[in-house]
Length: 324
Ligand code: NAP
Image: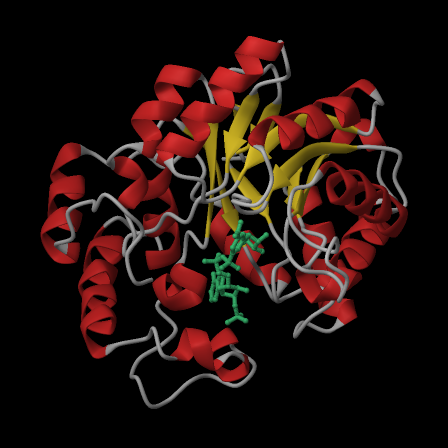
C-alpha cells in the first residue's frame, strides 16, 4: 500500500502520514550521499512532507535538504523549518523577537534556496518576548508570502491556548500544527495536548516516533551498539537505551512478528492510530529505513493488539513530558 495523506489540523494542507526530518542526520553524522539518497527515496515513495530547522547542523541541514528538494517541483512537497534556537553569539541571535523571527526566516530561505516555506515553527516557547510580538511577526511573514502556515513545538497547553486567544483577538493567523515528541515510551501528549488539538483545530506532527531508533529493534543490549548507529554517534541517546526499555522492545517484537510486520512498523502504526496526529516525523540515515518505515502507513491495529501493547509498555500518559 502506498503512503496515505492526512489533513494538517483544521487547515486544507495534506501531508503524508510519514514525514522525514533532518535533526542530527543530514548535514550532521549522515554523509551527504546517504542524505541525498534518503530524501530521494522518501520522495519516490510518496512522502511529501520534510522537516528541518535553522539550528540543525548549524544551518547545514537546511542546505542539504534545500538543494535536494530543489530538484522537484515546488508544489509537490511541503517543507517546514523552525526558529528559536541560538544561532550566534549576539543577544538577538535566538528567541522569538520580531527582529530574530524575520532575520532567521530570511536566512533559512537563503540556505534553502526557496522563496517560501510551507510551515514555520517556533521551536520552543520564548519567555522573554511578548507572545503578541511573535505572532504578529509570524503573521507578517505569511502576508509577505514567505511562510504559508505557522506551528509551535513543545509548547504547553496554556501557552498554546494563550496564542489562540491573541490570534483571535487581533485576527492573526492561527497555529495549525504542533510538533511534540510522541512514541511508545513518551505519551504525555495524550493527556492534554491531543484533546486541545482536537478542540482548537491543530494537528500533531510527532518527532522521534521510533525513540531515535530504539523502537526499530536493532539495539540488543545496553553495552553493544551497532557501528554508525545514532547511539554510536550520540552519547545522550545511548544513555536512554536501558535494560528495561530493551526488554519491552523484545516483547513488542513478538506482537510485530505475529502481524508479519517489523517492530518499527508496529510502533509507527500505534502512533498513527491517533486521528489528531497528522504525521509521524521520522529520521533516517539510510534509504532502506525509509522503505521499511513508510509501510506503517495504512496499518490498522485492533483493540486486542492495542491492549497487549499497553500491558507491555505500562506507561500511563503523564501530564508533562517525561524522561525520554
Ligand atoms: P526517529 O525516527 O525516532 O529516529 C530516527 C533514527 O532511528 C534514524 O536516524 C536511524 O538512526 C534510526 N532508524 C530509523 N528507522 C530505522 C529502521 N527502520 N531501522 C533501524 N534504524 C532506524 O526520529 P528522530 O530522528 O529522533 O526525529 C525525527 C525528526 O523529528 C528529526 O529529524 C527532526 O526533524 C524532528 N525533531 C524535532 C524536534 C523538536 O524539538 N521539534 C526534536 C527532535 C527531532 P541510525 O541509523 O543512525 O541509528
